Image 1: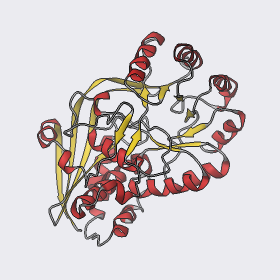
Image 2: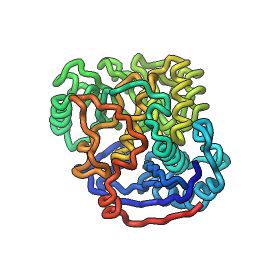
Image 3: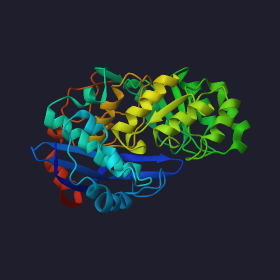
Image 4: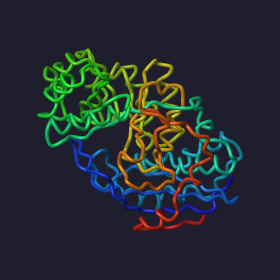
Length: 373
């Protein structure tokens, strides 16, 4: 396989409702879609999970576009794949670039997607997936008040979601979790702090141990592993690391230090499929449960999340909800929907190109740029 052309599409689509965390609020989906065309005419797509502001990570849509256009895409010139091994090492073409994991992941995953399309082999099987279906949880953003939050959770439980994750921050944490337990009993429940706390909050965070949470996600600094090990030693509740895990070596160090008992893997954050597989293998070896987090993706990103979640080490429900959770209309058709309540099918898709709605892609595109390699 040889890459003939790479096209960057920057889209804006309407979200059904705003999503709020401890560090920000997202109302519309401003997203970069990477399209790869091979010399044989195969098409691969991937989604760059940056956003407009450098809040979850240091990357933004503007930086990703720049780095893809001026550095990563030119580095792919002349590359050729004759085997799956070649595809799995494609990321090394731009390994010299420091950081910019989400930009790297966007092209890397589009190449995997194109290989799947050109060879007509299901993507999830190329990645090592073995499952035919996956369980799904849901992430609930910070709400105007507790009653509004309880109402949201009630609806999601009735829809069949198998785990509830709630965003927390100082002033919106212990009382919120207590209210959820009072209302819904011992449902599978976790709290996501998005780095809103410090070690000075140990005694406060220990209060969460009373509520039998599955985990508390990323309570401390977005780039920290060491302090999380200190905190985990003080907590009964398992810590799950998210923002701290950018590469396989981070997962290895976290395991060695006892910084967490669970890891949330996000494809964009770790640099794409090949790095995700490496992290998966470390977690399996270290007996660390793994799950796939969400970045409010369009259907393209959702289908890729489903594909990676088919690997055997993903043992906890992820955040890849059906498309309708965030969008009235998705970029793919048909949209991602439940096979049955709380469960998504792992389809034998040879890349996602046949699912992309070209009309919507063009309609929602604000900026587009193509590069011939």
